[in-house]
Image (cartoon, rainbow, N blue to C red; front, side):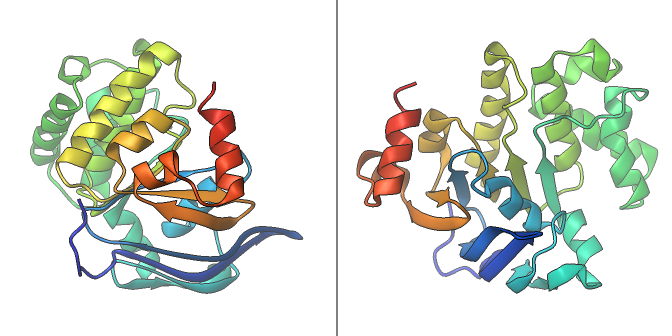
Length: 253
């Protein structure tokens, strides 16, 4: 739950993003406070994933202001000393798992803390085993990713992101590549993170999950935030007709 009056960990003002002539994000304003869980919903191609990829510099933006944990990201990919620091403080879980297939689960989770943070192997392995236990797959530590189900691989990816001790976690449709029976186990791990107070920005099509975990739901349409509020307000009494139309479609399926 967000802390009232806390300084935002993400502050985005009038942010614009173009892919060539395509205007993908249009004057987006977004502030995320520590401990807050923000869920972003919208149709495919609305700019949801692009928005969160801007937060850790995976996508450049063309104009506007963006700072993460007090560190400014510059438009048009201009060199920012803050970028590498931001990436060590912001964890991200993608649609695809992006695990190293030739490495064990344990080695996948320990690699970044050892390479980036300079952790010793013993220290990194101790942390990794604790995190694998936390996401419910401690018994898979010595296996390789190809030996795991999709749901297990995504939980390894989550443990790997957490191993960097991030102050903010970004999720880009983390269940969209999973078979339906595996979705629940990943969402359960994310629910636990939310209960523990992790600051999270989540792009998802899982509306029941969004209603349950979000402090705030944001609906994006064609690159613009057209509605946001408490989950019960957005889902039960949407004010914008585009939000109403979107929810009518997705909630009846």
